[in-house]
Length: 210
Ligand SMILES: Nc1nc2c(ncn2[C@@H]2O[C@H](COP(=O)(O)OP(=O)(O)OP(=O)(O)O)[C@@H](O)[C@H]2O)c(=O)[nH]1
Ligand SMILES: [Mg+2]
Image 1 (cartoon, rainbow, N blue to C red):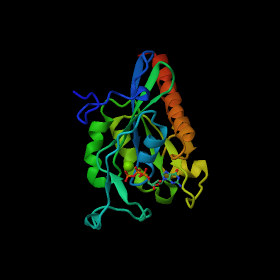
Image 2: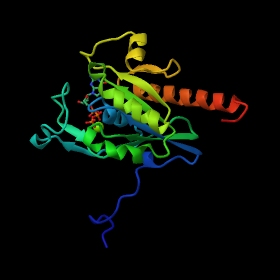
Image 3: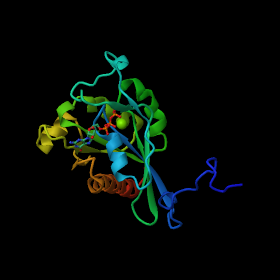
Image 4: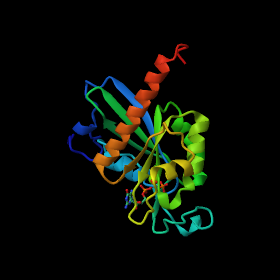
């Protein structure tokens, strides 16, 4: 039989194979309102070909989906994004991007399951879409940082003003990012990992161990 026949299943690409040195894997969710750049971030930073579930936005969504502020958007995530990045030879992050349209938010609970932490992407032109997102993470007890995804015409707020508007405690880091840039997305994930590390250290130092 011709070994190159069309029904031959290709093996994994070399860059998709997890290195033998990887000893720890962590689940991270990238969450935020509609069109804040979640899929863009997973795409820019993933070392494997990311899995995305984007569908074209059609007239059927008019009146159902809220696309105010991002009217030019033509596709939206309907289930999740998935990617992977190795932070070191040992540590691998599995990235799950959530859908932003409210009618798909019921999927979030499954995506939050087992997550060590989250990045909340925020578009300062539409801060209000972040309120519910942050509320849900707080309800589920998933630690998170906030990343301001800088769109060209977005207003620049002082950090304290932003913290007050989002009602964030002082300890929660707020970072700037450009989700289209791999280095910037990676820096954002590193900021989350540092925050998670500091939380774990603080918990370990508590006498009760809680
Ligand atoms: N200027 C700028 N544009 C961005 C940035 N990040 C994303 N975009 C653009 O914003 C649009 C929306 O990005 P997506 O990644 O689809 O947003 P999303 O949060 O996954 O959207 P939903 O899944 O529909 O909620 C795309 O056209 C991106 O090219 C950024 O950092 N700067
Ligand atoms: Mg998306």
